[in-house]
Length: 329
Picture 1 (cartoon, rainbow, N blue to C red):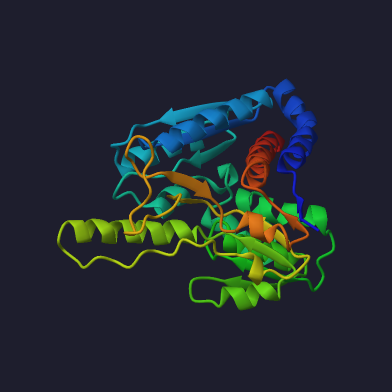
Picture 2: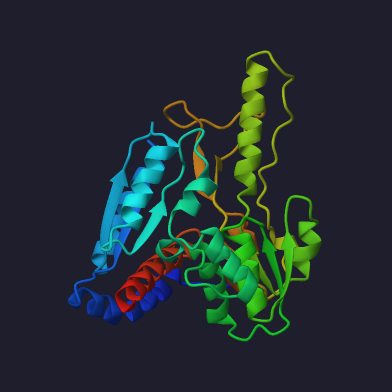
């Protein structure tokens, strides 16, 4: 029987509905929840996301400000912008848009945001609290999203075998800590792991690597070096999804938060297939072979309407919680 597709849109709507009374209370008290996004790039994807983010906030009663610094700014300029918003009592929460300018240190900027105004839960102090206690408010949005989706299906995780594929500080590691706090038995999978063997034992899989994008970017550089006469032609890259149907334990819950921007295919020469404009035909895909795995798993997220809406709902919740703390001081 095919897996049931997890309806992230409905879950996100429920979460945002639960926030509405607090948003109304704060706004009536003259402290409308206010999210500030700092953007220091000329990336088209970032621009699209900022626009969508602003609309999402405003549709749900939050104030949104985009502090667009342009793509050619120094680290000190970005820090100055962060400090301005840190010190503004009307600002509830702050986030940084990626990518950052070349030479700018992400960790330095993240540390500059006050922990209580950390919209994405990625400040080292908040991550440290999560490590020490198994809980943090705020905590990383995507990690909370992945675990929330699992909890909606299986509230009781005592002893459940869970595989977290990915060990980033903002998704993989915090997701594993949140699962541990729910008494799951958690295993990390990464680039040096035998992912097929680990996945076959898992009752819950959270895939969060972006491995295909990493492979593609390396291969793209190698192709360019070959065309420039600097290196031999590389062997065609394998862009097979990280998690395939043969790896998955029947009945497993599979949450895919991986994001990969890769070619739709390669030709016989190992070159990316081209679109009508003669440019590489690219696509966004996750870490999981959705079509295959959905025939084996019991529940699965889809690329559209899966983790994205719930991640955005957690961003709103972090912002509202931050505003509540400021008002209640």
